[in-house]
Image 1 (cartoon, rainbow, N blue to C red):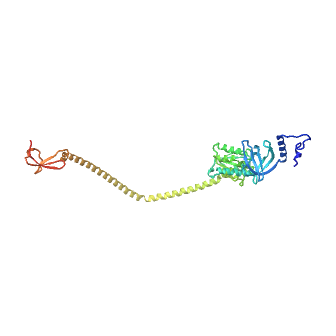
Image 2: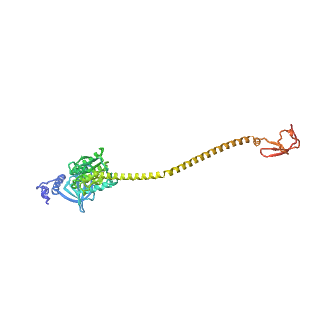
Image 3: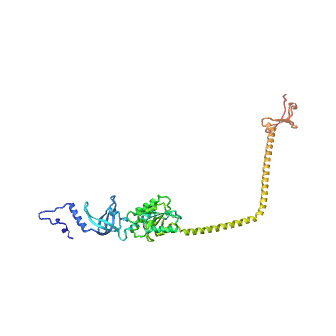
Length: 414
């Protein structure tokens, strides 16, 4: 490319004159040439130094083994990126080359970006799946069981699609005695994910809803993308009402399917999962009734057999019972006799104790214990009551409380 022909008056000024440019003018001319030469091009490279300031723009560096290129994704384009940009990721970018005047450096303005070797939506799906799985949103332990006999079912889907008609038809065929509430939402396009998430949150504020079906019919990955959005996944996770996800066909697996309490392979199957078949339920009840009747009949036969055995043994039992009652009366009489005997013995013991106390109170030994003594003649041990019975030289015995003494009378005092 001959740049001298595209920059007039820059290299061949008129004779005797000089064409002097300012830095801004020069940069502007360079930018014009670069933008004209390198517009609407695809570039492949590895991402590094990803930055996201508050402005909403994304700044990054594209590089290969031999060079690097500064690039920017403005907010309007960044808003549409479904996957997360990470350092080291190899990408294809579409846009144009320009010059950033303030620094005098060229940079690439990215209008579209996609991962190399895998679709952008598929990568976004895998990134979100990995992140939510680490947070525990897919944990089977937190999934709520479906009610066996729901009274009111809410369906979050497009009111005009085939999916809602299929679901309602199946439910009415299987169990017509149930109330169905259809909550109309967009199921694809801008704002669809927000509508679906808001519907789920709103239904959780309404009383009486036993279970919820969220889904749509089949379509491309782009058509089903609303059910791969994080806002929908978190609204399902936060729902207190059990949620069945029914999106697309069997081969279509969405984030909503993974986080929901139950996944239906198709919208039609969701109608089969949410209610039992009425005729099968009636058949099961009849079988249960038959088994209950048989069990009760067997119990009656068993009770009747026991009563007959009791009747046959009744006469023997009456005789034995009479003997046992007589033995019980004898036991009672013996017990009363023992009680009376113990009482009389106690009374006699108390009476003897009183007599012993009275004898002890008049005992000569009790008098001696208080300091008195008893004097008797030394020959016949007769008590001496007066000095008249004594003579000088006569031997006498004196009994004290402890021991006795023998003495002779040497003088009698009257």
